Length: 326
Image (cartoon, rainbow, N blue to C red; front, side, top):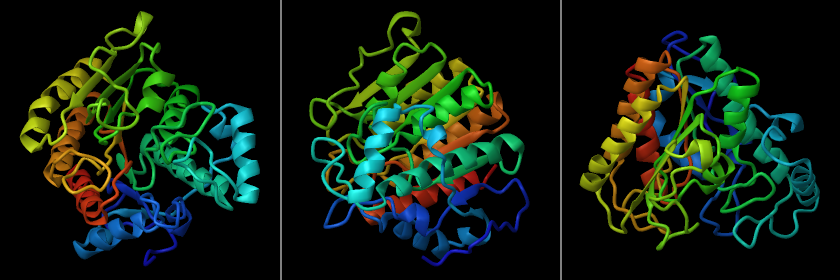
């Protein structure tokens, strides 16, 4: 991958951080698996083609220590991943997420890069960041799921609380798949404001995220699930987005996490939504405005899904271009 091997910026500390490098790209599954290790390079080639490599802070991937992974995941599950990482044999779930030699180390680079981005944002090195290979929102505390080994989103939420003592956190997800690993892990948490626009679970994995799922107990009303019908286009997205935006605004978050999966764009091989990259630009622009209003611009974007390489390249490049406007 044609990237610099150290952090760079031409625009000073305000320029967004973007994480690129082989250690991050290696999180991917071979032999024709839709989540291949070429996804990061597809994005970065497009970013370079429009000159973003000369404008952002290029940040090298960072590995997370086991203790940080266990802020969200159970020690027994982490031990299982370590074991199967050594052998490269079998699946970590029921058939979507195969083990490969070094999968533990690769997954730790996803987590570590997200946590490093949080540190940079909160210490003022940048106000926003983008980690392309991240947003692995299906993994549960005790198991893998849907191409996701460690749930960096959940680890980020726990870190913002335990290490940085933030309480009101907004998690916004526009991936075609419901972010079930985040939702159910924090379903009873009244200070995690969760908003998810996704393809209706009656038609797509993981089969969850119904509109009536709004949180439990004291957290009722702090979760917003917006199932979209197969074939929903930009017009449908923009209309539904108004609900998401109002929800996040009312939450007055101290930090915004944005899972911007590109598998919701028309032409993805495993989903049925029909957005264009304009949806990702719009969501980023509006979240950036909310971040400026409520939390000093603190916004972390994570790439999430996306299995048409051209789609993810255009969508994620658009996300970064909007972040550059801060």
